[in-house]
Image 1 (cartoon, rainbow, N blue to C red):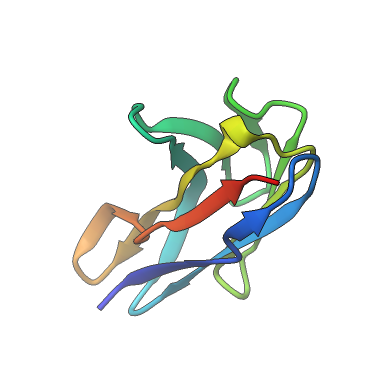
Image 2 (cartoon, helix red, strand yellow):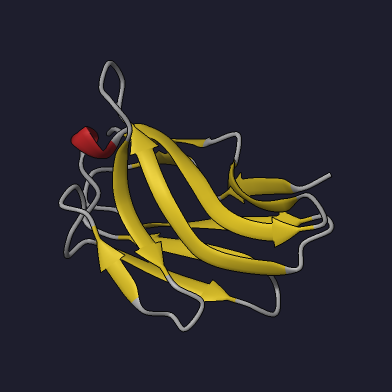
Length: 119
């Protein structure tokens, strides 16, 4: 069974920083694009950043300049470093990965990790 498991969420004060991690596990042959999304309360899901296997990254508008995505292909992990967090960054953060396995190629999502920015 293939899984994406996020970690690192929690409560942080305004202006603080947080690093999210996501680990892929299971019968995975290749991982293509990995990405982070978030869903603020009452809003639609939005892209934060996506990263290719060669670490070429692109960023959405939601956290541009305040988020850095990275990955470790050997560990099958993707990270999101966030700085200058504000209450408007409160959301459930999701990991996403395009992966190849015995089933073929498909898009997978983690269960999400809550990030709350409050004093």
